[in-house]
Length: 555
Picture 1 (cartoon, rainbow, N blue to C red):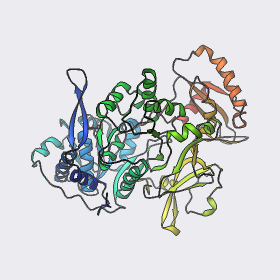
Picture 2 (tube, rainbow, N blue to C red; picture 1 turned 45 degrees about the vertical axis):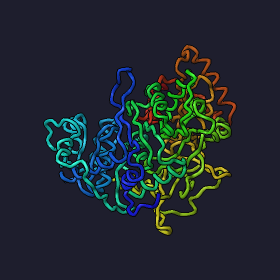
Picture 3 (cartoon, helix red, strand yellow; picture 1 turned 90 degrees about the horizontal axis):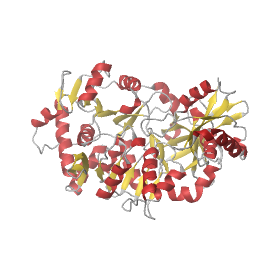
Picture 4 (cartoon, helix red, strand yellow; picture 1 turned 90 degrees about the vertical axis):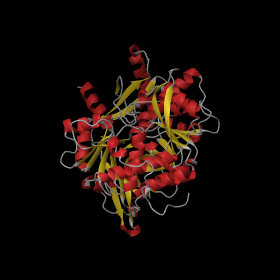
């Protein structure tokens, strides 16, 4: 597609409506039919574009204009898509928070975002009133659904006043203009609001197209709501899955597989927990999914075994891709299951970290020495040599420049590069580059364990113990003060493992550790029933919580 005259990410939608007006843009599940099969409501690109324009007029009529920060708490469905594009068309700033981040974190995030408007379903408005979300700043209220005692406007009523073919001229926003505030999952501390510009979003759309070869006319199954927004911009049809988006690990694989088969899905995004669940079911029932050209999984490292199971369902040419990145910078690197399963998994099992592939085109990636302090300005002396583990830092058009109302976090997370009129984002992740230029991930900087003998990094150590057939996953945590921490390996066993065999497993894990220099001194193992994980992907391990648990166990 030619470069848009405006950097506004919403400009992709009217363009797609012009190119393929009758192509379905989204299918929304609407309960079951007489045969107990899921019924879907269909909306074409022309309809989505038209409805989002009507909604843009409706929003403007109640004071939501360019630059107005607007909380959007609407579940993935037609209104979610149309309202998000309506807000982008206006040049308003959607504030997107994950309802699964917990009530306490939600209140903190919404207080920081200082939203002027709140769009939500009745349940969200009820929670807002009871819990005081955004109370000091919110002046405009809009209910999607039945409006009750809280006042404000109803979307349905506003739309009845507008003709069905209301044209709306998309705001000509600048590349640097704020497009949205997206909160991080908060895997290490309270979630922070990453400030997305229209340029960031447009770069992401272009990179997803380029890196994965996505074409208009493809059919997407986005099991993570924010990824669903990229589909219309890429000209893909989106099939909204029947699932609880806050619990990807508990998804019903039958429903996911049924949607893939019914719509001949060509691309899907799923967290590692969802890919694991669907892959296990597929393996047990000998299922094949020949329509899929690619599956994309991100949010945490994807174990090779999980990739192997899932790829067994795919055609020979199809792969599972595992892009590396963060809310603040996505995508950063990418690698496919073919390379992982044929080559890099062996090095991972030996404690070399997880290979996340080559940096994506146009991205500058450096590895710098580990520091917990702010770094005010870029200096080439920070750079480490090939093979040395340090912090991953990145610079590129998809990289966000700041956190909203978090000057300390911004100072800690960004390094100014005035010489090249830019900045680097500190990923907070540790890793190194190999001689081929690939990046290997070694864990979060905040999760490293500092013993009297030196530093241990989570991913390399854990991968060695994860090779045991009865181990689902492990987590390295430190008990005590950094510098004199006791290193502990927490172990979660595969479902159905006989727990009376724990003493035998303990001995076997000791033997595995003793065979590697990296893990030779790791002798404390604690067996945990089910690791605490993040809500967004159900895959990031909350090692901070496990460290507290381990400390209690060792008393």
